[in-house]
Length: 457
Ligand SMILES: *Cc1c(COP(=O)(O)O)cnc(C)c1O
Image (tube, rainbow, N blue to C red; front, side, top):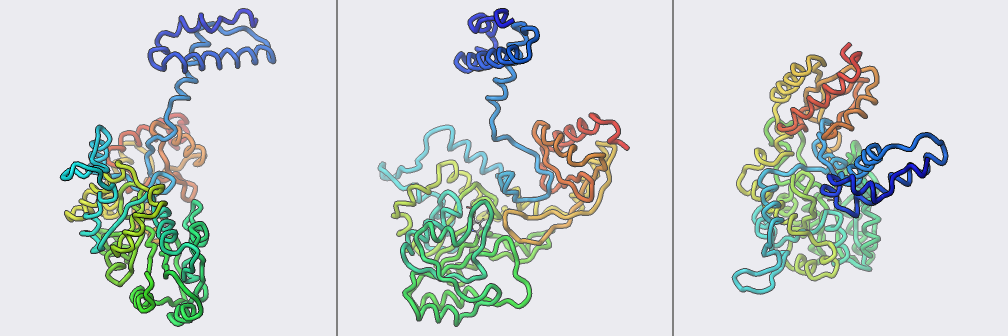
C-alpha cells in the first residue's frame, strides 16, 4: 500500500493552484506532512492508499489552517464594553484612517521637518495631551504597565515609595502594584490599614525614613465599602510638596469625559485625568485603550522636569510606542479636543446608547430570527473601570437545549460570535455589537438554530 502512494514530485505537478496561492516551500511542506501522516496511518491501521486528489485535498486543508491569522475579528455580544480578552477598545473611523495613512508610507516619526534633521518621536501627541489635560508635558509608551514601570525606575530606583495598603491592587493579567514596584527597583513602604489610611500615617512614614515619592493607584476593579477613609489627592499632593517629593498617581483607566455626565448613562463619577492634575498630582499614568477608547498605549502626563527625566531614561527606548500607535492615539485625542468624543469614539457611543435604541435593535434581531425573547439585562464597562456598575440593556434571549454547546458553535462562525449564558439561556447584548456586524450576527445565529431544528421549540 505504501508503494502505491504518489511521490512528492508527482503531487507537486498536480498542485498548480496551491503553488500559485501558497508558494512552493509551504506547499511542499504541506504535501510532505500529508504523505507522512498517511504513511503512518497505513502502517498502523492498514487500509487503501488514498488517491492523489484526496491527498491534495488534505494538504489544502493544512495550508488553510497554517495560513489563517491567529488574530481574527470577532463579534462581541457579551455587553462588556472594554473587554480585555477581546482586545479592549474598538477604534474610531478617524483613528483607523490615521493608522492606515501612517502605515502606507514613510512618516516624520523621528524627523524634524522645519529643521530637516533628526527629531524625537516623543513630540507626537504631546501638544494634544497638554491641551486636553492641562499638563506641562506628556509622554506616550507601550501601555500603562510600562508607564508605571518607567516612572518608578526613573524616579525611585533603590529608593522608598509610599503607597496606601488600600491600593496594593492586582489588575489581572499579571499586573500587581507590589510586583511592578519590585521589578522597577523601588522599595515599597505600605501605609495604614487595609480599610483606613490617614494623612498622619503618611506623615509618620515620612518622618521615619528617606522617601523618593508618593504613589497612589486607582482601585480599578474593586470597591471598598463601609468603614473606610483615605486622604484626598489634594492633601497628599500638599504633603508631598512640603517634603519636596513628587506625587504620582496610576489612574488605570483614566478618562477625559465625566462618566457621570455622559448622556443616557447612569454611572458614578470616575476620576478624570484633568481633575487629578488640577488637585496637584505631579505625574498621572493611564491606559490608551480603556476609557480613552484608543489604541493600546500608556500615557504619562504632568510636570515638565519629571517628564524630561523619563524621556532620557534608557527604559523609555525599550517601552516606546510605534508610529501606528501615535497615529491612532492622536486621532482619538482630537475627538476629545473637538468635543465629538461621545459621538465618534465607539466605546463612548456604546456607553451613551439609550435604552430605547438598544431595545429597538434587539427587537429587529428577534424579528429577523423569528424566535427568542427580549429581556432586561445589564451591560458592564469592563477593563477594570467602574467595578460593580452596570448599564441597563435589553438582551435577546434564546432557550436552547444545550446553551454551552450553542455558544461553542457560535464561536466557530465566521467571524466568531461571542455571547454569554444567563439563567440557562443564551443571551445577546446589542450594546457592544457594531452596527455593521448585524448581518453576520444574524447569519451565525440562524445557522446555529437551523443545525438543530429542535432549537426552535
Ligand atoms: C489597567 C491598569 C493598569 C495596566 O494598564 P495596561 O494599559 O493594561 O498596561 C495599571 N494600573 C491600573 C490601576 C489599571 O487599572
